[in-house]
Length: 399
Ligand SMILES: *Cc1c(COP(=O)(O)O)cnc(C)c1O
Image (cartoon, helix red, strand yellow):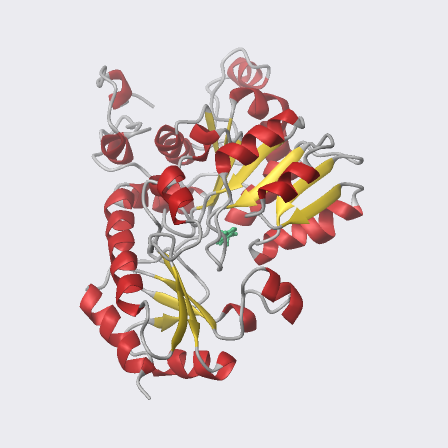
């Protein structure tokens, strides 16, 4: 690879510029847009060159399970945005969550996690890790006393999501990170709901941040992908070898899609956030709704914390519809613009009924603990004209 603009741009660049240009490496063909290197392997000019590549004398691309130029561009762009030392792409968000924990935890370790978790994260914490002799403690992430008690004993990892899916509960990143570090634990934050635009967990003490690029980073419903951001030390000691030898590699095509998605990430997420705020305000107090949950509303119990640790209030809104499941289904089935889908972070506004889909595995009691009621709907607010979104839900709620 030659002529990387990193060799041309000598000044520090600002975030929006790094979203467009960060990590760019041009090939000898001088293409404008980032090239898609759809190749699994690489060739060597001589047997000696192959030997030097493998013994580390001349580091270079050797195999796309380890690294690929398109993937490197994506990783560098996201690394710059997050302000982390290292970024590693993975095949999906779940591959990122799993790798972040499995690469360093061992039998006898303790993990403390907030209970309001994405379904697959809860499988890893509740079913998989305990099978391998890792003790996992799940608690109410909003309850600082519960964190304090759980972290009064040594621990190895803290895992949390803030805001949570779908209840939009926040965890105090700074306070919990401080407690975790005092207990000897690394803090892993699933920052998918907040997005790298609206929340910078490492500034509050998080050690590792994970993303599903499937969500806002692609943002157009095309490709799965994920990423782990961490320190050089964590990568050297744990993550790199785990990823190389277990193989959850991000495909070059998917990496390219996420890379190009990042060019418009800030614009899209800012507009989606504005739409979410306006939709939440419009729906708040409307007949037919018991509750509107959005961290940007003054009525959100953690609105002050949201102002302190988030740069925007997010693109997700939760509603509790009157009439339980029946009421929620009636609303969903009457929508004309908004689609019923369990995905999120898309340009298209998507609505889901968590109790019957994403959180079906939990029983009623477990769902209530994480604020999922029979009438709860989760809305991932997209890029449509806000008036069409307001009208769609207002009409669907009419008696
Ligand atoms: C979607 C999601 C994941 C998993 O990401 P995939 O790309 O679907 O594997 C993990 N955590 C949260 C909060 C998510 O929304």
